[in-house]
Image (cartoon, rainbow, N blue to C red; front, side):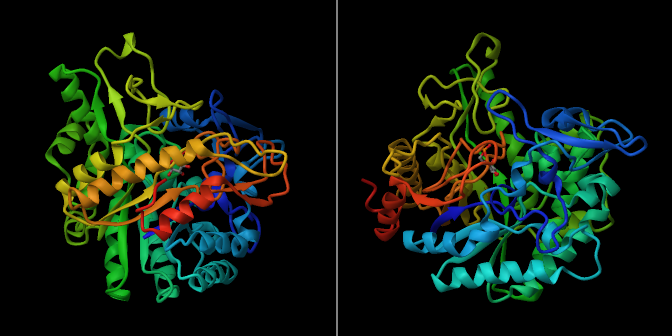
Amino acid sequence: MWGGATAANQYEGGWEEGGKGPNTSDAMTSGSHTVSRQITWRNTATGETGALPVYAVCEEGLPEGLEVAVVDGYYYPSHTATDFYHHYAEDIALMGEMGFKCFRLSMNWARIFPTGEEAEPNTEGLAFYDAVFDECAKYGIEPLVTLSHYETPLALVNKYGGWKSRELIDLFVRYATCVMKHYQGKVKYWLTFNEINMMSMGSFMAGGLTDGSPHAKAQAAHNQFVASALTVRSAHQISPKIMVGQMLAYNPIYSYSADPADHLLAMERERDALWYADVQVGGHYPAYRLREMERAGIKLEMGENDLELLATYPADFLSFSCYGGSTVSLRQKELEVASGNLAFGMVKNPYLETNAWGWATDPYCLRIALNELYDRYHKPLWIVENGIGWSDEVKADGSIHDGYRIDYLRKNIQSMEDAVELDGVDLMGYTMWGCIDLVSAGTGEMRKRYGFVYVDRDDEGKGTLARSRKDSFYWYKKVIESNGEDLD
Ligand code: BG6
């Protein structure tokens, strides 16, 4: 299934419309390649307000007495984003014109349950996604819906400390069950948590955590695994046709040198991501992760049936994001540092070209990733994010010549096709990331664009929000029409 992917926190906007409550992304300011995004807070005793860099909250937590809050005087890109809320019909028509078979989007949990704890869902929120799915059906586009893409209702963060609390398990499963039932017949494919393994590095986004301790992160991941297993159980009770997938951030890790010690390091860094799939798809904690937790003195708070639930209800398929391989070396300090998706602690790969954000074009990553994951889990796979952020220029006549994007996608799609045709990997679909321009999750910028469709909006929130087709729009239409045969 060819298509494209988006996420509500970066695309939907309408943050206070239709009864939606605030969520974590609504309290995140914009940043840039060199300046971190910030999380805004309020002191519950004095009412004083301020902001802290996202990485500081993820590493050190939010100081005692502060709560996450949307406060005056800051610019929050998620509030309007690129306004899918008011442009969905036009946007889905553009996807239909490209021939999409599938559209990955995320549902905003706080649009359905504004604080996460209401007794009944918000009917206006349900109606919005009904309209979206009806529009998809007009063009024969199958929705693939992420239940939580980097957002948690803010009320649950301030009341329970986000996913470190087991309270969130039942609240999430209630939300998931409610929407899977409501959209039965309209939505077959669901994902639970976007890039669940980002809990290790971006725990505020991945789990609404304001506690930076390794214990809180491990507990939050465990609670999400249990919530995922219960969601799988609930999905299969609703209808055997529904499939629930895991979503993993996965870049193959390369060893910089032939030194076996570098190779061991590469294996360890791979495992940093893979243990999450070992649990959610494989059904149990792997030995190396249990030892790692033991060494770190982490003891998980477990429900009586947790391990049985994980083993009985693994994800039906494994979806993942992959933007390019990452490279590690023990001689990291002497080498040039890499930047780009998941590049923390990585070195620059001398064999790959990079763009202004340091993102490399890797012509082999999808084939390597697909084979690694298929060999290990033997479950159907779905590439739900792949693409490249670039600052596009609109010419005087309105045209946008994004040959660099076509070049990146051509190489990546070829690599994916090799895995299917030459290696026999079972691949369900490919949804290119950010098919219509949206806000960057990492930097909060607009200038770092991914789309086949340009949206007139800048880093300060100015612009008409008008949509226009880039060169890659016509190219991707041709790719889909030929089922990937014509990549020229
Ligand atoms: C993935 C996320 O990690 O990368 C997306 O799931 C994100 O939400 C994408 O947008 C690209 O990263 P960025 O920082 O360029 O938006």
